[in-house]
Length: 333
Ligand code: SF4
Image 1: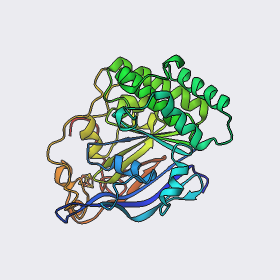
Image 2 (image 1 turned 60 degrees about the horizontal axis):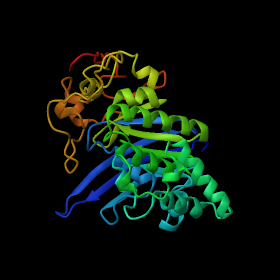
Image 3 (image 1 turned 90 degrees about the vertical axis):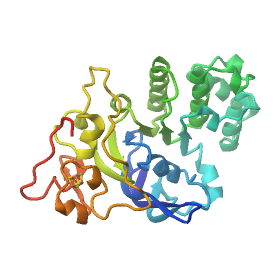
């Protein structure tokens, strides 16, 4: 395939200590082209992070496994890639940024050395001077004075630490960046600065991105496409400009945003929805949103809805596509 990333019918399960099977991802399909960015949105437990970790082959060992489906990254099928294969791809082809910068930083190593480790792993062709030059360049690009390379992570603020993590993630100009709530822990003003910086670096390097977030405003400003996830499935998918303009949405999307937010107001956070997230050890047989859906019909409880696609926008709900169906309108569900 010509896509940078193709995920086909991905299923992932976790085994709990109690011997239960958690069905975290249940048939995810998605594609991403070079340089493009996709926002992955949904409540905690929707399967967003698990999907991203699968692309890096970083699912928790023994307990988490891909049970079905395929992941093709940059022309390679990595579904069954070994740890050795992945070590070469990580940092070079694909990188990940987590919410907490200390997940990625070593507290007892100067930040310059940590960036250097990544460059020297992937760029054996560079001389010592060239490596040093590359280190200075990337520090400058993320707004860290190069003379601070000898400093340790704790000597930096939260926003600066996340900039260092971004430097580590992007120093080898990966083709794909996975960013899991990269700015959620930061102050609002710092968030915007860090996101702007990430965007300009990505544009410069032509790096594609999957951005996991709870914030549709962040998606609007940073993504080309958006996928909404629920109970391990994508339930709505489309171009960002379209999702903010169209009237018809999946009932979950409507509930999540209390109608798609007015981007001119400071009303961008998720709305709580009545009822509990589907139990991933005991998922409903039909539509996984049925127990919480105000539009639930008898068919919803027995039949899994398929995607209905119109003008490139896809919705997985029985209200769409079937003869005589009437789509849910925006507004509080
Ligand atoms: Fe609601 Fe049925 Fe659509 Fe599921 S398929 S979201 S239960 S209307």
